[in-house]
Image (cartoon, rainbow, N blue to C red; front, side):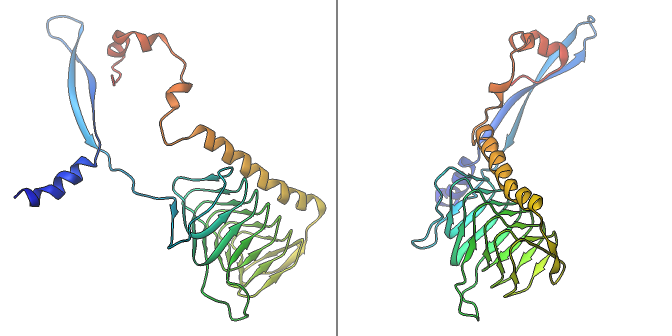
Length: 256
């Protein structure tokens, strides 16, 4: 009997139970003062089993800790992140078939998927190589491609297998780069399939280059502000209500 109940007992023990008191105000028939009633409330919070870094055999994601990887991101297999690179929310980087390398100060936007294939028909390496100061916006998909330095990839773009984006290139949002396509340096391409739009001037090239540092600074700020442990109470200024329990009851606020 105990052996049947043991899994349920273990499952319950892994769920933290939180209890707090709720203060409600009800008018009293005897006088005009409010009567206090306290009710115990119990709820169960599931523990997250998500892992940011997932080893695959003897391969594991590597980064030096100077960059930022969101708590909801997933890096698996042979993934190498250089200094000050950022990986944002719900990003999936799969280095299971071949390796993925991300250069310094590069940024991978929300919900982006980076994956590899086993091999390319051209005989090139099927790795994903992302240079330095690259900005990849949200909801993009990259597969076994080569991205040069200072490249900007617009949101919801798809970079297919064997594609090469040379240094300083830019693709507009929603662009699909077919397999094996070469995007020359300092050019803007757009469309499905992508087509040449124009040459980028000096101002646009500098904007694309400096955009990566904006994401790096934002990653540093997020990493300093939001941690795995609650710390918002440290930023709150003490008030008179904090040291006067009666103030909570008068306002009908919750006592923890």
